Length: 294
Ligand SMILES: [Fe+2]
Ligand SMILES: [Fe+2]
Image 1 (tube, rainbow, N blue to C red):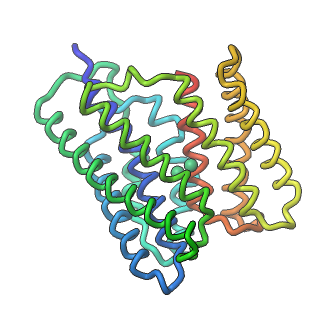
Image 2 (cartoon, rainbow, N blue to C red):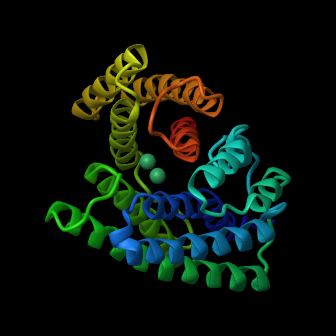
């Protein structure tokens, strides 16, 4: 039986990145002051758009995605539902938890899935919708970054965080474009992947450090150490042991993020970190760990 990588890889991509984009939009929407209500509305448009995309993806994915992806903790974690619930209460922004509940019930598919023209057509449509939404969201992120850098807008997001989520959106866009051109993602270089995600992990450690209450000295120290470790990894990314080192450091950061997410949900950690942001960076670490183990 022929493996339909186009269908599988597209669905796996949207299950991870579609959710990530929906949450970036929520983080943007929650970060504006009343004077920029118009931008909050623009972010809400993409939050809803990616939520629809994710809902559609989940409804198509049962039996078609790999067990590795479903079990990796990159799509949902044990904290996601609680984090969504708490974030909805704290921000007043709606989060459709049915999508997460349905995602948790997805069953993995066989290693080989048959080619089916009807499914391929539906997935092609999904990819087109994602590309259209991404073009708009990338433009919005660029516009916000420009306004912030020129002093004409205040948001509670660091400028580096806006740059960071912009890079993640562009990576998602590149992957879909590659899938549409070649039908697969097998040509993506691991060295590029390591470079990209090592920087992302370093920045997560920096964001966590900066969003913790100044009293949380021990956690700030751990986050600082993690950021330094990734910074060194980035300087020696051609080293023969770089992949093993990246796996070790990302696993340590993932465990720190998991403990942090639990601490935030239990109100045991003082911070200005939204519960869903804590779970979001945890899922991104789980995603990178799966790629490193591949
Ligand atoms: Fe992200
Ligand atoms: Fe990130």
